[in-house]
Length: 168
Image 1: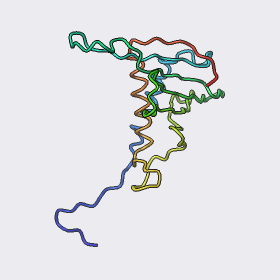
Image 2 (image 1 turned 60 degrees about the vertical axis):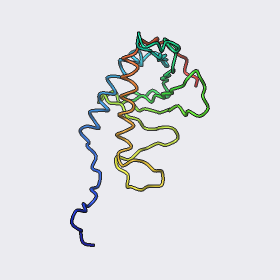
Image 3 (image 1 turned 180 degrees about the vertical axis):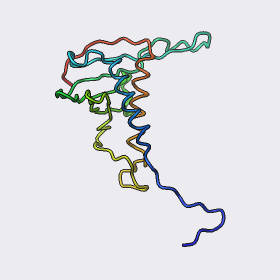
């Protein structure tokens, strides 16, 4: 098939491995700040709050709890730890599906990556488009960036944290 003038050939997605590894390394640092007693505790819980800017007149939801982030240890090994993270809302709206994920934390190389999101696990670095699960070409990179944003949000909030037991 010949290329017509003005038509461009679609380029295949190429993973940026350096950026992906850097994101996983940064997630390890964030996770150690969010869960500093990972070696001795079974879990931690963060309560995220709605904040209404002062002077806006929108104080109906001021300082109300918006969601709870629960991080629990699923498995400890000498060099790795498997964690589960659940995000839930106290409002319990049935039309909102709050995410849950599983992480593998590599202590020897100080890196953390998402290995399961909802019911899917073992993500590839690149997916063809279209695909049966409707994944984006960079699905794995997006999940690790989402983890980074969630951990950063936990760190930036005026939060309350408390240890939790290991049962989910």
